[in-house]
Amino acid sequence: MSHLTDNDRQALELARDLRAHMQQWLARHGANGSFSISPFVDPTGKPSVIITMDSPLALAMVRSLDQQQPAAPQPPPRQQGQQGQHGQPLPPPRHLGVLPTQATA
Image (cartoon, rainbow, N blue to C red):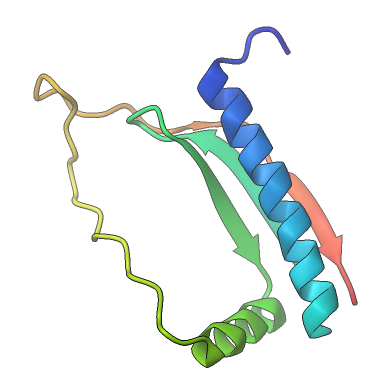
């Protein structure tokens, strides 16, 4: 994988770590469901992930998050047509693939 940038590698590591923590969360909460985590580098070069999950898992997470206090701060809304340093439109994100996970407790 020598063709990967440092940000690509960081996105892959982030996805692996997040997948492991989500599997531990599923086991602790007795939740059933499936999810996948896709690492990518966003248009600004920041390592990122996309999480997809089925509805039973999403509902279990919503219920769990609702029980936590205080609520975590919300990220600022994403603006349409974001531009880079020189006023140029940002390129689309580079997706690095999908790390599928079938999780059942």
